[in-house]
Amino acid sequence: MKILLIGSNGTIGAAVQQRLIESGHNVIGANYQAGDHQVDLSDKASIAALFERVGRIDAVVSSAGQSQFGPLLGLNDADFALGLDNKLMGQVNLLRIGVPYLNDGGSITLTSGALAHSPMPGSAAISPVNAAVEGFVRAAALELPRGLRVNAASPVFVTETALAMGMDTSHTLSAATTAKTYLASVTGDMTGQVLDARAYA
Image (cartoon, rainbow, N blue to C red; front, side, top):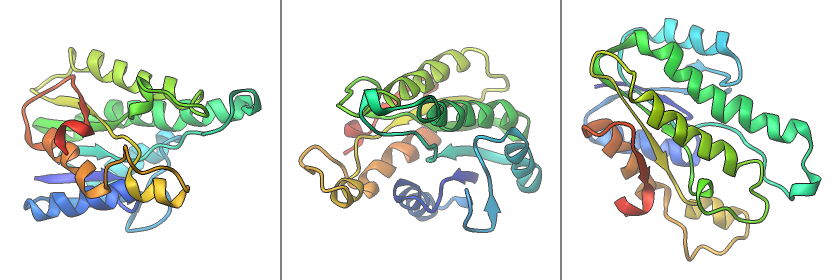
């Protein structure tokens, strides 16, 4: 399959790219700055230009999306807007703009996250964004044409990120293990599902 991977140079994205390539797929990576293709998820024109450059594809995988972590009473409007504009609407627009470029039976895999249903202190601006992505996936799946599918991968904190942040790693998964979730969405037949990364560990 020809797969467009958003966020291919991120911790999870790089692992997803490796797993997809090892499974025999042709992966086209797009990132905010690095690589052959750039895209700004908060800019619809940037998303549209990316699809114009890439052309027809079999799948879109998004392992990107910015949101702000921080104490509730220290968050400002811009902190909340970051996740809403980038991780939520950016991924919504990947689907809206990308559908015409997908071949029949193609798939879209977005990223939510465990903080949607298991919040922690500091996640007040992230948890609602993740939950909204999951709600969007469930609703969008009911209306997609031509046998197209959409799912959300829901990762927990990846071990590499937790280590970098000095966090406890006892409930984390490696990026390589997390990547199995995305592969399952791309190669499976499910739609409208939220795929918990822990189920693929």
